[in-house]
Amino acid sequence: MLAKYWEDAAKDLGWTYTDIISGATPEAQQKAFESALQQKPDGILTSGIPISTLKSQLAEAKSKGIWVNTSASTDQPSGAMFDTSIADPAQLAEWGKMVAAYVVSESGGKADIQTFALPVFPILYEFDKGFKAAIKQWCPGCKVTEHPQQGTDIGTKTPQAVVSAVQADPKTNWLIFDLGNLATGVDSAVAAAGLKGLHIGGLTADVPNLDALKNKKEDVWTAYSLPIVAYRQVDSMARKFNGEAILKAPLATELITQDSVNSLHVDGAGNYVGVTDYRDQFKKLWLVS
Image (cartoon, one colour):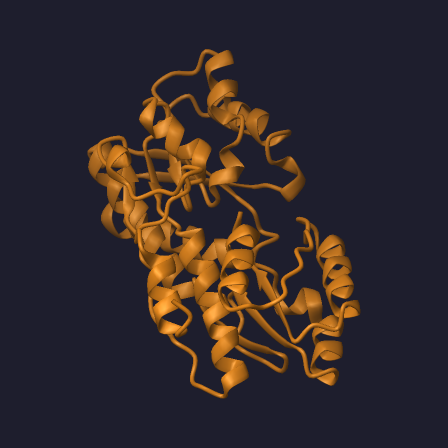
């Protein structure tokens, strides 16, 4: 969905935009970036892909004067990659603390937690680290067990991995995912296995997670405004083209629970927005309203 909002922002500025699906493996991401380079653009937008994965491609971008912006990165700006400040490690760590605080409070300090993570995206581990550190600080008696997953496991192997983890540790009462999509199929899998008393949550709720909160099947997620992330990235690119300093600021966010989910600001497709008039605000900033 991020690409949809990149496209909207580009149109608002009168730019030409082309979408290329990057994939969830380093090989696929490299191939997608090479396809982008072949189109000889002025700039390329990415999200979550480490600079190390794109080392040779970024060198080529630099040689061709193509600027690159990424959101959700642990890296510092380097070469063609001029901005990595949007959804940076500090932001992810804060989200980890937010979810940890909720888990400790709701469990009464008696949480047995299974976490499921996607190491292919290093930025997500910043959430995991923030979550674990806060649990250790606020609930020394709580237990956290980690289960790394592959991008290709989403909706395929991960649901069964969750079931197996809970069956191996029947005291489990919390399942935490470092990406909303990673929980795809989990609600159905745990129900089919007859597992009860499980609370589900994590980082960056997607529309299915919001629906699950409304249906009382999941418990807590951090909000991630894809529209504002996308518009921030395009704004950053525009500032670079104009020779202006980029904006560095936290993203609009909140902790979404069963109690708050029905009062969220969402778009027509049900995606979290957070700020309803974000598009008008950016257009006014860009002097195109």
